[in-house]
Image (cartoon, rainbow, N blue to C red; front, top):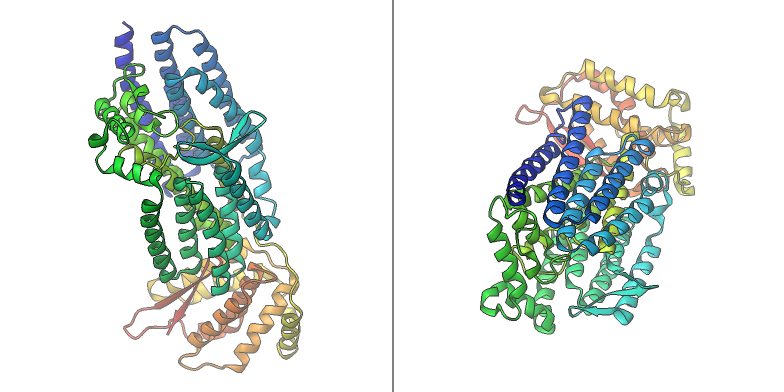
Length: 600
């Protein structure tokens, strides 16, 4: 009877998890309205609890251990507390991220309970503590603006902690990964990943000039070198990839990215010849069955487990995942695939991908360049760690000993991943509130004097007193009077309105930069090629100032000045047609905000 229930339950769990996964991607669609999306999230929660109940019912029936019932109830209370706390304290939080976080932990608890009840209980305690610690992070991230100014503190903290581990850390499987504090084992590199992202974001927020890039590269290389010397090559690889992606997005220079990847490839070859630890993993990856008794045992048993499970799995407690060395940490994906099946394992990958897509979506929609890079960097770290973990389990790449976030056993990994999720939630809250994310900074004296001189030569400040509302009205007027081919000005107006809504200006900001732009327009009366030259000049101003002191308020003020001075010209000339009859466009991105000027 127990075997029959176990056999039927595996199909039920696959169906429930497949339905949950479908809702993940359906909720990401832009066409879904708020009410329908909320209903999808509620169904996700129902599917999660039904899967959880099904799994622990099977585990209880096969083991007759009453402690599992208590453990199950504690987990239900834990998940309810997480859902309720986020619902009460953060009403605008991303429900998809919360649900996926709980679902992945749920799968981890089920898999660990099957493998080792003792380790599952320890993981649960760490999860409860982690939730209590990280519950406040979204609030602080969405309000603390000074974090962008701690650039060198991030660098110092990261290098110091890695250095301590390299010198005093305990050796585990040939690598120095952790040390113990009061009987608690801590792996600092898991937390330094987050600090490292904040460091890189701060550096590139300040400037993307060559000197700044060189400084950031030296510090990043120092992080990676210490990890390589500690033989923690998997984490070092994550640091390297995260830095390269952030560097390319910040600078948009392909030769930086290509050069970095070539250096990384050369370093990988050098590591193969320098470290026996690396050679062992490469040999096991090339032909694990040929060295089954030695290097290839772990990878071979992982492949046997995945193959034995097939599409639908053996059922909980019906497989032999304990034959895989380090299955709880490094190869838990193989254990899940063996007993719950290949379909379930694919759905697990898709849920992780939906989290990554949400992270990247938040990064793209952030207007503040610093927070855009933070979201991108954390997303790359999360996604690449999943790639390394699952890729090593299925022999796609050599095994790196990296855990599967929120699923594998490991307190440091669990806490650091929950910190990443909490930071992302803080950025999501910031975006949802539509706050001006750039802090107020004093204007430099030279810049202030220049704007005052321009103001005296302009039309006076009275015309700018109405601020963002006046601009919005003007833009709407231009759109109504100037219907461009291929939706030209309509797109520009929408972009400018978005800038105004996100950046409510103070009076001084409007006056100074509007006067600046007005002076340029008066000195450069354009004829046929006027607007193109003006756009180039204004872009030059933005690139030189780099939002130094007033951030996005200056950018909005510049755009407002262009529209005020160009309104009459727009009315006389309702469309600017390119050489081939179409409307040509050029885009510039300034700290993540797109401005579209129409070329002639």
